[in-house]
Image 1: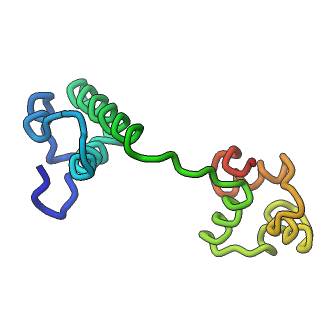
Image 2: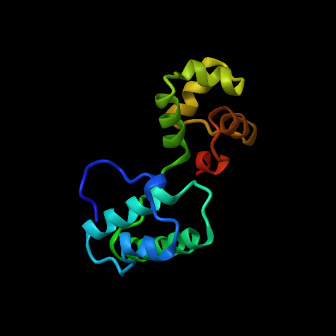
Length: 141
């Protein structure tokens, strides 16, 4: 299916189910190469306004990928709320001082949170989830 390094573009995909099947026959996935090809098709379709044929094809491809992932890929280890907070701060170039300003705490309290000796409150989590536009669930645990 894939002959170049360029990703498949939605605009180049067929509009009919038969055309999509001709491009990439939906089959059970048995190896990493077939998995990569199926994921590429899914990424090309995802996020666009699809017609009924494209939706049906996407649904089938997603099921095949889910089946492969369930059988061959392990679940990622859960990430603690503290690790997620540290990651968000790092990715946004923020420090413990910045954390204190975001959640309304003094500097030492913010650094105790980052060391794990003090917990975030529900109000802190709400402020952080709003600031970083993430689910509050990511900061729990």
